Length: 114
Image (cartoon, rainbow, N blue to C red):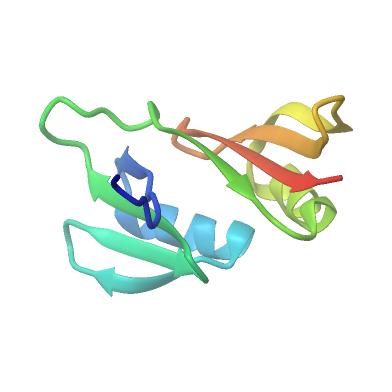
């Protein structure tokens, strides 16, 4: 049986530099690999890959869900630099989470287990 070791969402973006800066501010993701056409951002075992629009992939159509410790702190940052789609709330399914949209339209859910 295949064992999965991780997953890394990849978002097409219009402005690679601005989006790298955005995710560094919001989630503390640091570029571990970066060229003019690709970036791998990482915080611990969590990765996000960013690349310019190409191959039929348009900016603003990505979606991901991130689990964190300190969701209230991330939410406070998101209110300042992103569009909050669903506010922070304790959910019946055992998470405290919110949904936001980054400056290019990608949607990211951020959650902490209750």
